[in-house]
Image (cartoon, rainbow over all chains, first blue to last red; front, side, top):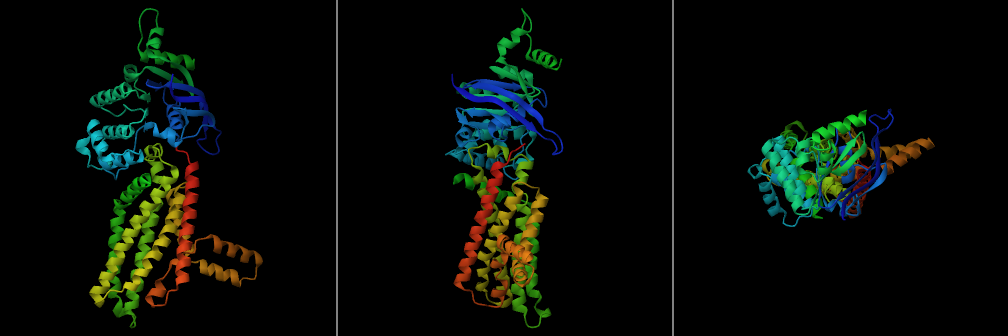
Length: 249
Length: 255
């Protein structure tokens, strides 16, 4: 079994102000994401989803524990070559046009035929009509699409998407979901966080639930949905709410 | 190298598309033109005054542009989270710093080149000939700009744009006062003060090394060893500052 992401005993604390004591945001988090799967990382606000993602992508360092991406330590060039990352609520350079932005990211991702790939991707995410428009004039949904495009540009093996479906209209969500499934069909791994449980339900092979910095459940979606009752399946939303209530009880 | 050029291109375009740049450039060109009209108010020194003001305006506006754009160079990327998609690409942090440095340097060098060209045209129109000796000021001014961008990169890597801008101004002012610091060190009797003043003189950037205004306006000779020293000093100091900015930026986290 090939492992795409391996997190071992990750802990991380933050101080919100220098006079305050540190607050532990991640508590001994361990995860293994298998190559080729779509993994949904779910949890309420402030649970530690984005912090986990930032540690995987090298934006933050853990206080303790280790991270490997396809066997390479996180934040190395070898690891970063394999990753396509979409941050939460992405903000991009407003002075660049959509084409310039993607083209620069293509060059950063060592894409050889970056001009051609840029045009293809703009078409693929449905914003080729706005290629020459500065990004400051893009709507939230358009920014999300160009964000997905920059994650796709170097054809990485692993996609790390922080809330990829937020801010999109129903058509946009459907198209991005199709893109995610298309990547899985190509053998790519997708790790994404989401608040939108029906979307996670539609996409994921496995999910992980994080509450208060602790991973409380990892499992296959079909197994989870059968756990609720002996006979009928429950929805992911019902199961999720039950888990959170149990954790807070 | 192509990754450094991609970052450089982005920084160049970011600076070029700022509205403040246009306003500053209009002011700069106005001053270059006005400088030749000050002739009647001087006692037969009109050509020298026009040249002095022209060179000073070119230098002043270049420094102003460096401080305004350079102080936000790294900080804005972190604040607006635009850096996230860049640092997570297979790019070294050192490449980001070098790319940003080059982007701003090429922008200011282009502006300085343009202002020098305008100054030459103004002189040609009003005096009937170019003064190509003034072009010697350009590479010297580039050295000063390189050091200032380095200073702003260092501060912009860990502090706010306001603090970076203030530090940029302080270093610029002190950088031009280092000969006075040396004079003070040589003349003071107090041993501790002498030691401190000497330390400041050798640590702080000596931007007077790149000030050729008096030499050029008064047509004083330039010596090869002086030129070589200034060029070596400029490059070594800039490399040191870029290295410092890289060390700080590599340790940086993005919360």
